[in-house]
Length: 98
Image 1 (cartoon, one colour):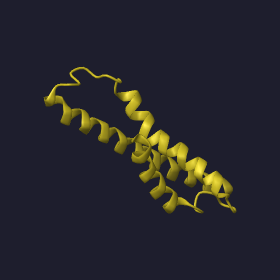
Image 2: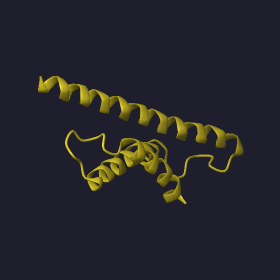
Image 3: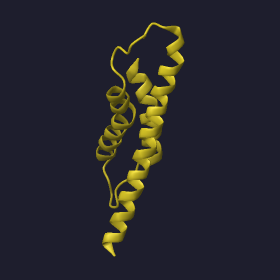
């Protein structure tokens, strides 16, 4: 099931970003690789680094909503940081070309 959960955001990101990453004529394979790496860094890596695989009180119903909120907040924060870093990198590249 995780593949399905990650495939949806990946396909949406590919649809939005395809042809807009590179300055020249990119290949679809290069776009796909870059978007897959970005999706992994945004959606999989931060929550796995933040939360242990078996957090304390994992079966406690009182902590389920808290753990879910922390998981999605981590993904949202990671996505915001990624977008900010991409925009900053593009700005710096434009500034260095002039």
